[in-house]
Length: 308
Ligand SMILES: Nc1nc2c(ncn2[C@@H]2O[C@H](COP(=O)(O)OP(=O)(O)OP(=O)(O)O)[C@@H](O)[C@H]2O)c(=O)[nH]1
Ligand SMILES: [Mg+2]
Image 1 (tube, rainbow, N blue to C red):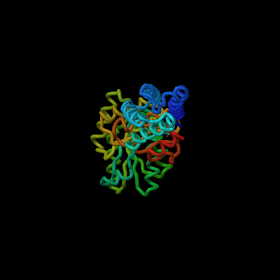
Image 2 (image 1 turned 180 degrees about the vertical axis):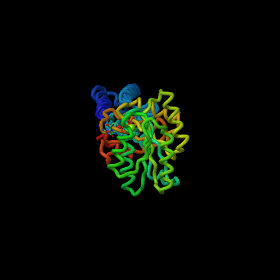
Image 3 (image 1 turned 90 degrees about the horizontal axis):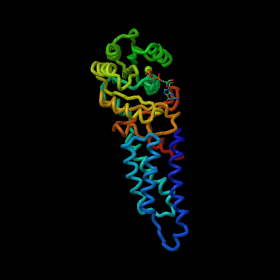
């Protein structure tokens, strides 16, 4: 996890060391203690490139650079390496903290059944995220209904049915090709009649550029009136996931994010900045394919994996 990002951060730290060596000689005569302004500017440039290459969103990069620079000005060269790690850690922590959200607190704010709709591009992990969430909600004592709202992809209903059977959760489905808004509507009616707590609506994967499918998604939202609309993004797609989140947010309004496949992600940029970029909470991250491998996002957890 985050190997690429770690390597980049190491490199930045090593560069401060280099200056220390170069100046060792001169130090005696000049007694220069602080990092030079020129060196700080160089470091900021390298940091920007490293973060860009790691797919961190521009909005987050600006914030990180500003905070690191603030901490480095006046730092003594003696402990520059430690200082830059500390400054980077603090700056990234600030971004990550802003991304934390408490999903379980959030759903308690609404009258039951709480309706949650999941959207995202093809293959981002929506259906798996729903199954993992249903597993977790059931463990916490909530009763769930899942709506098989992907009537577009062949095999999608069967995939969800397999999960629902394994989990012992009710699935509401129509035939392949049916109107997904009608499936969502039926699932909500079922939940109301049977006093179920949560309705999880799966939807077909759609590219943000496909106008017809984006319109269909708006219709599902109009009909289902979900309390929460969750964008499911794939960490491996990096900056693309951030762009998608922005486009889906513009199109229907996103309330929170689930980022999947973090276990396989070397870069880490999406994890650091997807929620920050759209100013919405990152509720969960997927860290494997098992039902118990979706965990609430915590800044501390992420920091540990980036810096240790
Ligand atoms: N390693 C890993 N794999 C994951 C994770 N989440 C999902 N996957 C895998 O990603 C693939 C796609 O997941 P789906 O849940 O089918 O994705 P989807 O968004 O529903 O896809 P469409 O319905 O085609 O749009 C599957 O093989 C999942 O097992 C994760 O957190 N880690
Ligand atoms: Mg799916």
